[in-house]
Amino acid sequence: MFGRKKKDPNAPKKVRFKTIRDAYSLARKHYKFVFLRCLAVFTPLWGVGIGIGLIFNRPGYAAFLTFPLAFLGAFFYFTRLAGNAAYASIEGQPGAGASVLMSIRKGWTITPAVNVNKNQDMVHRAVGKAGVVLVGEGGHALRSLLTDERRKMERFAPGVPIHEIVIGNEKDQVSVRKLQRKMKKFAKKLSTVQVRELRARLKSVGGLNIPLPKGPMPKNMRMPKPR
Image (cartoon, rainbow, N blue to C red; front, top):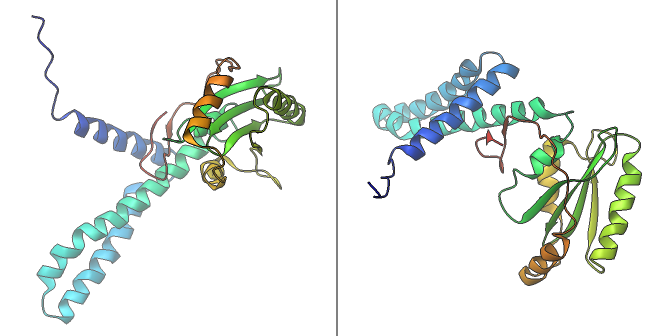
């Protein structure tokens, strides 16, 4: 009666299958003939492998060896399609930047919407070994929000490196698709202990509860998963 519930050994497979199914459904909304596109990548790769096998009179052996390689190539192409579709599904929505930031697996503590105005311009805060990164998304009033938040960070965390990112597709802005890559480029300036102290110091300076765009989000260029 009070015994522990047995874990389902097939649970990880079910989750993985659901992730792939959701990613495929999302990709179909933005691209036509997804399966045929993947097949168009798989077939030539496998064909080249079999062709090499024919040269050495071992087509069956070559087909056996190159099948998984061709499958991986097609699967990688599929993940790119699904990832692009995931970004396209949230691009331009309020909170899209926060959704991407919160999909970063490790290294950063994300606080969405630490500063928001009535036009839904907003600033998100990321804390990591690079210091504090303020990520803004919105219109013309965004600059004042970033300035206010920078002053607040300088008051609560003096001496800590503070970086600013503005999400967009214009000059000196970073698109939603390239946001994760940009976050990885910041040089690490703080130790693990300093980061822990910084997080504790900024814990009281929280954010707001905002609805984030839903849908599968790419995680470090791997298979998208609902975020």
